Image (cartoon, rainbow, N blue to C red; front, side):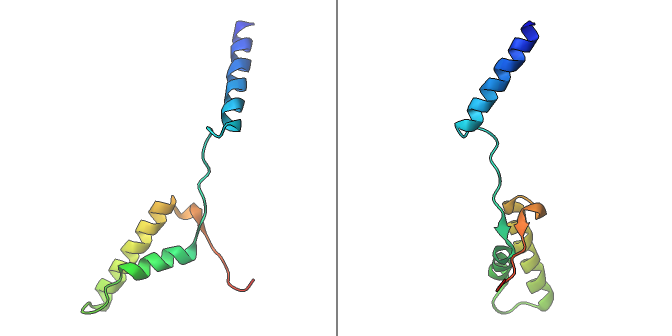
Length: 81
């Protein structure tokens, strides 16, 4: 009986925490456009070969995806729909 009372107390406390906003935070989705813009910003402007420009753009895109929380957090948005 004591275990059941303890379980109900924990359940009540957890419900109260979520109502106060102390529960798990949901990550917000990031539009693909932001990842593309981050890739553009990291590309060198002049004096770089194509290979180094592509490499730096990929690094910027990877950083943006990692900062967003992974590939599952990237939202594909179509324009005009």
